[in-house]
Image (cartoon, rainbow, N blue to C red):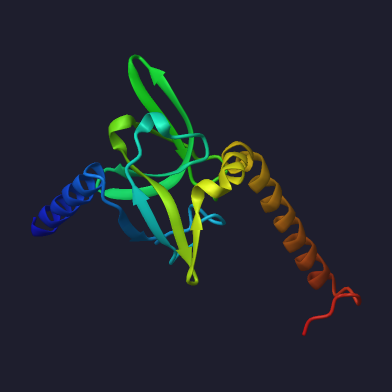
Length: 165
C-alpha cells in the first residue's frame, strides 16, 4: 500500500509541476519510440495547451499508473469529448486512444550523447513519421525477415557461396 501512495504523490507532483509551467526531465526507459527516441535519452517536457499540439508532436500521457511518451497522430471529437490518438514509432499497427485528461505535456527537447535536439526543428520529420510509420516499418520488417530466411536457407543447404567467419 505504501508503494501506491508514493506513486500517487509522484504523479500529482509531476502533473502539478507541468500545469504550473515548470519543465520536467525524464529518461527514456523503453524502445517504443525508436528510432526518434532511444533508451537512455533525456527528455525535457513542458505543458503545452492541447489546442496547440500538431500531428507528429511527441507527447507525455498517463495510462493507469505509468507515464508514456508517444507520437500524436490525431485529435478529434467523439460524442462531445476530445479523443487523442497516439502511437509509438516502433509499433506500426498499435494505436492508443486517450481522453484529453490523460495528456500531460509535450516533449520539447531530448538529449543524446551530450547533444540537445529540439523536437520542433524536426517538424517535417515528425509529421512524416506520424503519417508513414504504419507503412515504412512493416516494409523494413519484411525485408529483414527476407534476409534472415535467405541466410538460413543458404546455411542449411551448405551453399558454397556462403562463408561464415
